[in-house]
Image (tube, rainbow, N blue to C red; front, top):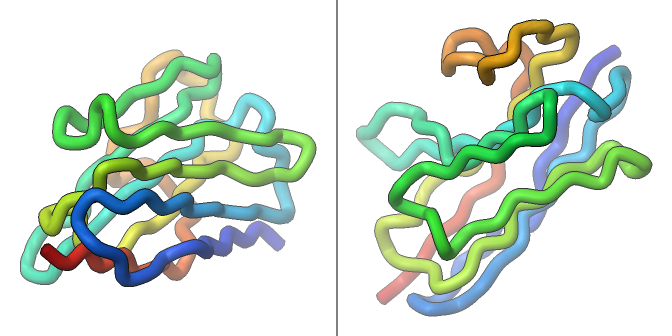
Length: 125
């Protein structure tokens, strides 16, 4: 059974760093698009960063230069290193996967079919 589980969320101060982890089971991360998304209260879920099946990486403009996504296929784990956190980064962070994806473009938001339960990140000023 395919499963994703996030960890690492916390309450931090502006400027702090945090690393989120997402561990999966039931499928291989190798060649599978993996992504981090976030949803703040009253807002839609948005893409934070994606590793596409070819290894290419996409970041939302709001996190470029501050966040880094990485992946350890041997551990079936994807990470999100978040530096210089800001209050506007406060959100529930979700990990998502799209096993079996064959297109060269990354999945659109509605095309991700496996999601974790989320981990809360709160940044105080």
